[in-house]
Figure 1 (spheres, rainbow, N blue to C red):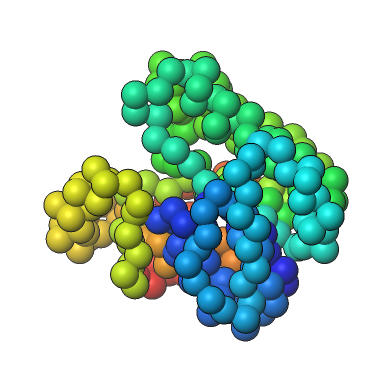
Figure 2 (figure 1 turned 135 degrees about the horizontal axis):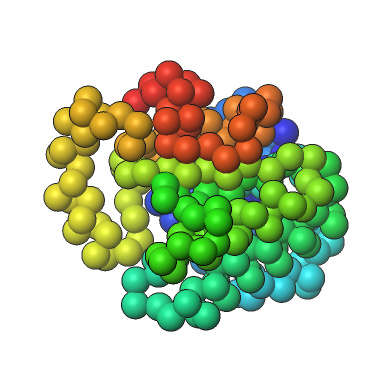
Length: 224
């Protein structure tokens, strides 16, 4: 299997990249982003490209892939809806359209989040925009498209978020993860669970096209 990964330097993307590189069935991982991953591996190829909303200059390098794992995202905190829509909906749909043209038999997996609003009419900006993005992707004629909606994500294996204030939050929250896992297992997961679940869904499919946090964990019996 050959995989395209967007958002490989983010917390979720780091976890997905790790699992892809460990999986013997993954032949190649092409990481596309605005900054390099800083990793060296025989399977890993990278395109460092500033304007992700227009991949046409590198389109000749995007064909022959079986799956795309879209893990790129930004916080909506402090952003107006129009700006958040541009970097979430507009960019994601543009990337997906380019990849679909190059790989019509591709499986596309998108990470949104628990609370995403499929009706696109809710009061929460990020939920509406993510819902609109999910709906647009599900309408595209990929071989299959799946939306992942994790809740709280526990980073494992030394993975850290790049965002400073997120790092402070995780420093406080991480010690409580074992307790949350016992009390509210349907609302917490790990970077490892997400990466392994993405790979399995890309290979084997899944009955649902929108996977909530509990679905992600159940794919591997929550091995964290």
